[in-house]
Amino acid sequence: MTHPTAAPARICGNCDGFATVKVTLGGRNRHGHLRTVTARCTTCHGTGRARQARVREVAA
Image (cartoon, rainbow, N blue to C red; front, side):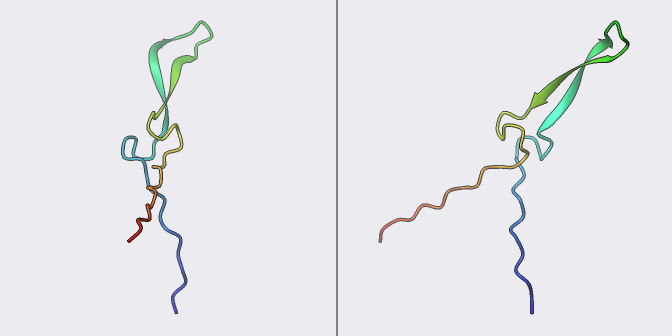
């Protein structure tokens, strides 16, 4: 007998699941660290998952 499985998480189509990334600006600061900026996906707001589509019930 098979066991019920959870539905797979829907991955965001814009970022392919890589919702937050660090981008180097080039160069280093005076302490020797790379200058970076954090960029988040604007579609999924940094979660990496697409929103679930709402199921609309229509009266027959």
